[in-house]
Length: 485
Image 1 (cartoon, helix red, strand yellow):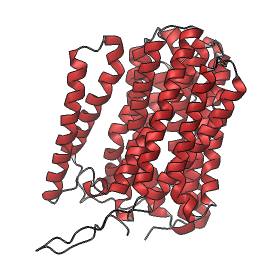
Image 2 (image 1 turned 90 degrees about the vertical axis):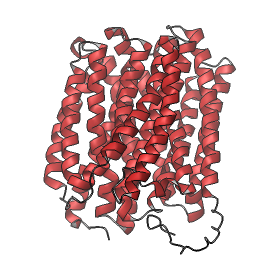
Image 3 (image 1 turned 45 degrees about the vertical axis):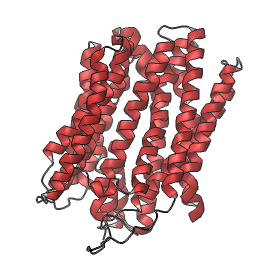
Image 4 (image 1 turned 60 degrees about the vertical axis):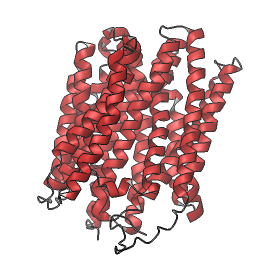
């Protein structure tokens, strides 16, 4: 049973919970808009720009599940507050960074702080809200994601274009300081404490193995293009497969010994959960890839301002915010089909962009904005449908695992999206210029469309009922306690 907050305080509790997620999401959008300015003022290479974006999301991904377990063990309130302080301090370091290398390091620390806060959000919602209140809280969760993306796009464009006191991109990070301090004060006062589960020990071997696997996978994808794809990049990719296999073995050993594995493998062995997470990772990869590529295309390809670049995606993120409330008012069938249908709409929008560019209409801003709006609506439906399905599938006991898995999936998909689609774009358009940029963006848009449609197939497959399990001889059948039937 969820612990219900006093009605008078539930609003501030939600503000406290969702505020940290808001900051983390805003920072992703702002930084993508700021990358051309960072490239100009710090002399950052294409690989360094990808690390400035994906270094944050990769650290975020590596620490989300671990942070969720830390919240379980030490109390989600404590971990959330520590994360806010770390994020705010790292934002100051980002804004004052003198070189691209320092900025990358500060972004990694900032990603760690964001992981500590975001990993507690769904846990807090599942612990303190139930029934209609939980549905409302999850709707606000989706709405905050869209609002933060809108503000991130607009603020990024405005702050970079304003060039306040000649600081160029720096206010995009420094704006986090007053917000972070205020939010920390509100969260300290309003978040209720929950008794920590000291008996749940942190799975250090699992955390280290998973982090190593993710690093081995993403780093060669980000750095391989500029390095000329030497042998170490391919060796690293091969080693990542072995590391993921080792991670599964470590988790099984932990479970067999009666320990507390980082990931409850029973959740991942269920086809609906596994397919939903894979589909979500692929879908999020298209969004993060679009954020990274679109800013470079518009500013260094078409010569548009950072302000225009920031405003261009407002239609996307606004439509994303509409999708959640619309889905909430829909019937059960619409909610069930939202995940695959939303991804089909998303793929059609990307395909439309590719066709517009191929037809020589690269300067048709209205067509681009309209198609981005359609893409945002599809993305929002897919996101909300997947989130609703996952949170209704598992019991409250596994709130931390679901929170960690879902958010890790988002960040891993985001890191891979920036690395893969960013590499394709920078390969085809390594320098500023319209012709190469249009060609590169056309190819990337087509690739985004194909990825979204594959994700739609996976999401539809996840909805298919599993075949009845054959009775096992000489063994009593037991249902999986992690899942609601």
